[in-house]
Length: 159
DNA sequence: GCCAACGTTGGC
DNA sequence: GCCAACGTTGGC
Image (cartoon, rainbow, N blue to C red; front, side, top):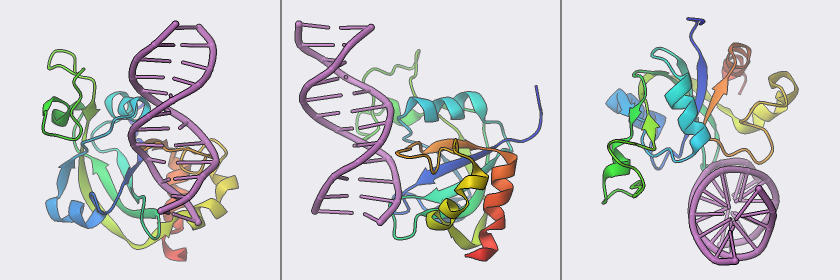
C-alpha cells in the first residue's frame, strides 16, 4: 500500500463551522456527516496527515477557503448516540456505530478563496469525474487527486 | 426562497 | 426488489 499522503475536500457551511472557527480551535472533530459515501471516505480512506481543502458551501461565494489536515484516524461520531443532538441516530449503538468521523486540524487560510465559479472554468483539466463539479453532486467529503490538488491551489492567486 | 438532483425510507 | 414519497443538499 502506498504511504503517500492523500488529498480530500470537505464542505462546511460557514454559518455552521467556518475556516475561521477552525483557525480558532485548531483541531475539530468533523461531526454530523450522515451520508454513507462520505462516511466511507473518512472511515476507510483517510490517514493522519492527509491534506484537506476546506470548502464553504451555502454562502455568497462558495469555494475553497483554506487548507487543513487529517489529524486522527476514524472513530465513531459521538453525536449519533446523543438523544439531544440533531445528529442522533436511533439505529446506531455503541457496539455497532453507524457514523464515523476524523479530527481535522487547521493548516492555513488561503490568501484569497478559490470560488466555485473559477473552479468550474477548469472543469476540463479537473476531469469529468471530479465530484465537486459533477452535475448534482452533493457529497460533503470527497477525494481529490494530487493533480487536482495542485491545480486548485494554483488558482489561489488568480482570483 | 426556489428548486433540481440525489439519497433514504418503507409499503407492497 | 421496486419505486413513490419524502427529506436534504447546495447553487443560484
